[in-house]
Image (cartoon, rainbow, N blue to C red; front, side, top):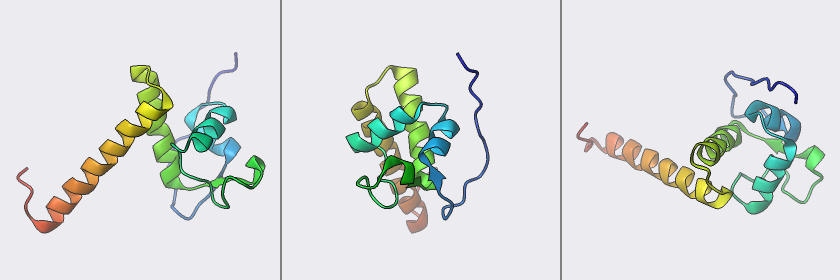
Length: 108
């Protein structure tokens, strides 16, 4: 088995990752990414799912979501739908906390 090399760094929103680059950044096989895109739990690649997978391009937010999905799946032995629900709920909590902070009503 090959040793996995994890890529770390800051990804700018305008930058685009290929399927292979996204998979490598998450230390997963490209099939994992394809399955999650087709299941609708990972963002649709730029250009849509109708184009060849070799033409798919992903944004920084897709990388963050993929890493969160993978973490939930691995740590809690969750399936992709459950992991997506947990990630969505976490995102919603962050949005609500930000909104409360902007409105000046947060009590932290």
